[in-house]
Image (cartoon, rainbow, N blue to C red; front, side, top):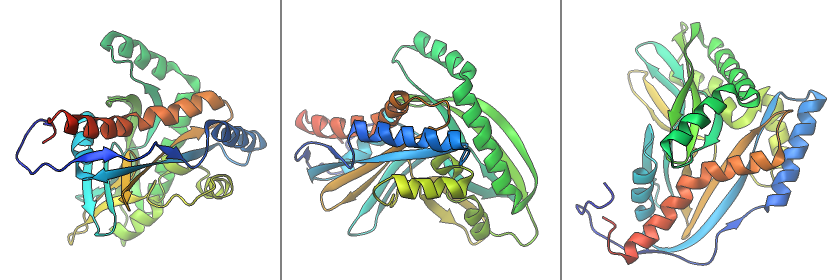
Amino acid sequence: LISGRDVPVFPFSLNNAETSNIDDDTYREMVRKGIASCHRGDVFQVVLSRRFSQQFRGDDFNVYRALRSVNPSPYLFYFDYGDYKLMGSSPESQVIISNGKAIVHPIAGTFKRSGDDETDKQRVEQLRLDPKENAEHVMLVDLARNDLSRVCTEVTVTDFKKIQYYSHVIHLVSEVQGKLAEGSSAFNILGSSFPAGTLSGAPKYKAMQIIAATENIARGFYGGAIGFIGLDGSCNHAIMIRTFLSRNNTLVYQAGAGVVAASDPESELQEVNNKLGALKKAIDLAQNMITQNKLP
C-alpha cells in the first residue's frame, strides 16, 4: 500500500523536536489526582489525556499515507477544511445508525503489542484476566447501555469483551445495540451518546468536570466525532482518537488513559504512550521514506 505510486510525491520533514503541553511527572500527578477522585467516590473512572505537537515542513498528506498503512482501522479519514486538516485511523465508533438500530462499540482495556505472535497471545490472556481492565470495560459498557436507553428501546449487548488487534495495542471491544425509539433522530442519538464514555469516564458529567479542572487546555478535536448523517436518517461517526490535527505546519495529537481507583500512575502514562505509538510511527515513516524515495 505505502509503496504504490499513483499520486504525486511532495516532501515531508520535521522541524524541531516534539513537544508536549505537560511533562511525564505532571501527567503522573494528574493520574494521582484522578485516583483520589475515585477513592472519594466522585467518579468510578475519569479519562485524563495529554497533548503533543510536532512542527513540520512539506506535505502532511504523507503522514496520513503512512498512518493508514501502519495502523489500518475501521475508520480512516482525511478531511481538509482549508486552514486546518483532520486525519486519523480511529478504531472506535461514536455511534452507527442503520436500519432502525443504533450501535456503539465501547473500547476499554488496553495492552501493548509485543511484535511477537506468541507473546501477544499470552498478553491477550493477561488482558482477559486483568481485574482493573475488565472492571473498566464492564463499567463503560454499562454506560453505553444507559446512553442508548435514553433514546432507544430493546437495548442489548450483542458482543462482549472481544479481542481486537491493532498495530501497537490490543483492545477489549464490545457492541451495544438499541432499536430507535419513536421520535428519535440521528441528532438526539448523537447528543445522547456524546462525548463517548470511553473518552470521559463515569458518571459522565462529573468526569467531564474533573477533566476540565485537571487538564490545562481545552481538548479541541480530541474525543470529538467525525462522520456523516444521511438524508435517510442513517449515521456513522468515528471518535477522533489516533487522530492528527494539522494547522500552521504543526501536527497536534493527543491520547488519554482511563483512571480508576486501582490505577498506577506509571502504567497509565505507558498506556498513553502505547496509544500514540502508531501516530509517532507514521510521522517517522513519512519523513524517512521520503529520504529513501519510497513514499507514494
